Image (cartoon, rainbow, N blue to C red; front, side, top):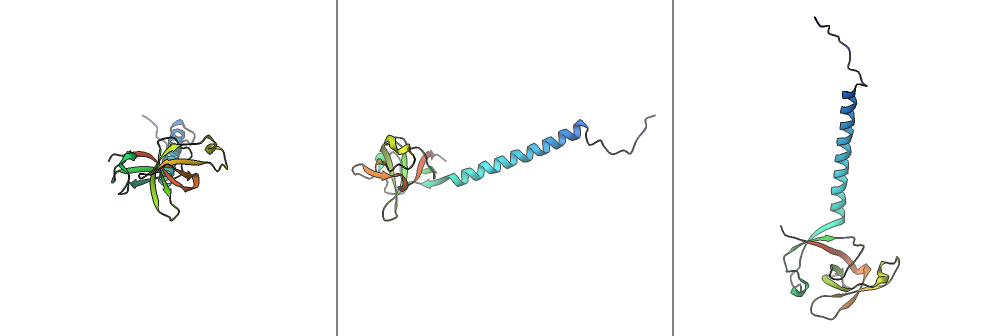
Length: 137
């Protein structure tokens, strides 16, 4: 005959401790996942290539792009969105990146090409986004 007891489970038993640790780990993973989703939502944007974009840029009107709204580094061949003096946005391709651009507080300019024109100077402040990838879906 086995004896039954009405004792409360031991709070320091290995199973209770394991359950508590797993619960806190699940919460931490969910919090990290939500933070990652929030970061992606604030950092990146989905943009459709505007009509009238020069086909020599390699992007067709209507293609969906993922754009980094806070770019740090630029490379030759990157596509960037910029703001004109009149407030309009345009799409350009970078053709020259000066070494002084990476220096904090530098006033160096990028050289970029757009619609059938000569390369133009483009300040870092005028760039509002860098194309990360063309979204195929």
